[in-house]
Length: 132
Image (tube, rainbow, N blue to C red; front, side, top):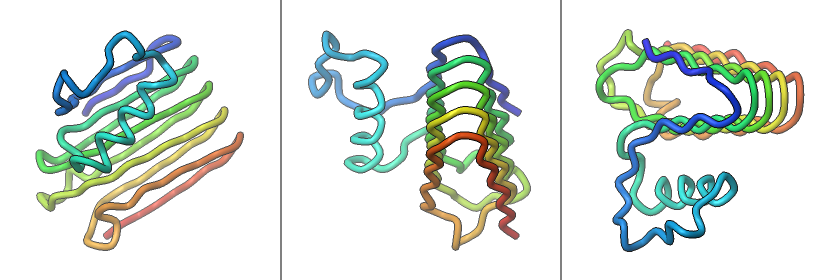
């Protein structure tokens, strides 16, 4: 299980973007989100990435080896639980939470949830998703 939940800015990522395509002098906490979105749409998801901007955010992931997930949590006290270690199916997912005190709890993956993009905007929202 991968558990993340540190400080004001956490960035754990595997980006397969060629260095000449990125203007590193203009990369900051706002433009990194655009870079992630561009990387997802142009090249598909390669590896998994977690971006957390805010305080007391947490992402607990139990993934199989074929899971590619992109997570963005912007705000404070956001929590994500993503568990799909029960299957060996390839899965690509993107989850974005913008706001405070949001909870997203996803268990399992299947052909319907593959490629799903979840975007939560606002405060005090909760999503429970079960894919069997």
